[in-house]
Image (cartoon, rainbow, N blue to C red; front, side, top):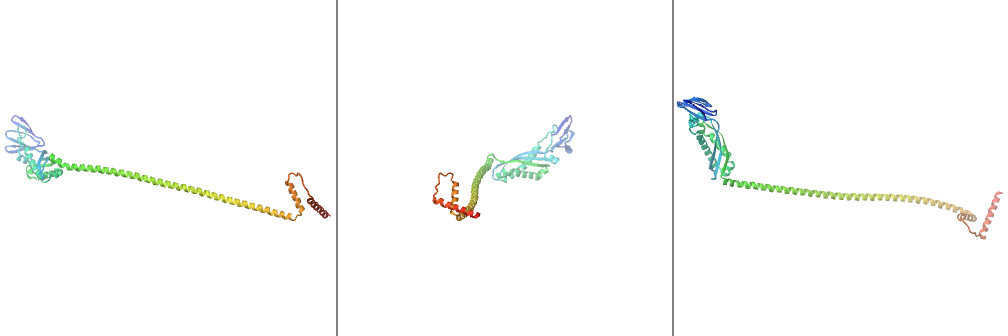
Length: 340
């Protein structure tokens, strides 16, 4: 709103930079611009002030979907003035020369115009789709249609307006219908949650089974290795005993061979000694065979005397003593003859 000051018969107006002021005197445009300030006579001057900043226009439309369900679309239209002179000719933006306030309500006129066009476009879009699609994808669809329609509207352009953007925050049905539409989704989500729980439990069971199978496999492997260890220990023990038996056998065979060799050597020695004794005895017997009986008797007596430690009495018979004396005498006579 422009700032107006009264000075007796004249007045001074100062506007903001975001306001476009048009001053007419006598039906002619004498001054215009953004953020201007000037003196004027109130009795002969008419002033209009057009806002040049972006304006936001909220809206809420109630309509029906293609399946005849109540639906609501709400959002915001952002617009601005691009041709203030043309707009001032189409809409009354006159200000009170004493206060600087608008005499009429021009922004309400613009709001009615834009919301009417937007509602027409939005209701057509809502009526072309069923309620499930509108609740799922209605907001972007309504925004595209309304924004494209407002941008392409010739009447809006001719008035000197430009739609900057259209935002649709929600397209909703009634609360009861919304709950009914949400029920399948809730059931589906709950089912997915249940499935996820079941899958989690199944995975847990599978992991538990895998763990048990792994433990069982480990136990089987340990039992198999223990069996191999026992078998290998038995084989080692049997091999050790066989080696011990073989070693003892070798020792016994060696000892037997040594005993046999020693016995053979002893037998050979005995055989040699006995052979020598037999030969010696044979030779001695041969000597005795050529000796006279008297000499043999004498040698026997000598040998007997060597073995007898004491003699208590001796019996000499004439049959034994006579031949001995005769032999001694013969031996002496023979020696004497040899000396001669």
